[in-house]
Image (cartoon, rainbow, N blue to C red; front, side, top):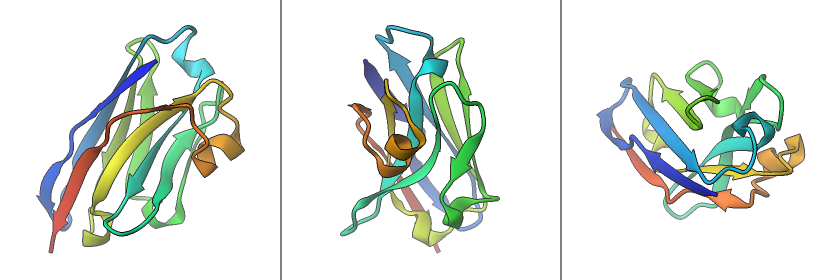
Length: 126
């Protein structure tokens, strides 16, 4: 399985970006993978942002992005998205997408994911 993240860039505070994560080499329907977005700010650990458990269509988010970010996936195209609105300087980070065959809530939330994309840089200017 390979994941290719894209869509990062430089935007001003209050702006929007849409990240995409294209998955290839999947051995089953993409809905049967847990998938998520994570971010790593400079000098900090990588943290969970948003995700789906395996075979579940309800998404969950870290508190700091609730109401501003929306995760979605197109199972037909094997693409995971992260729509980010009302961006803030503290959202600046490298964003990673990830997938896992187990894909439990715990695995997705804790980042215990087998497959990772290369990361895409999001920079929010104040």
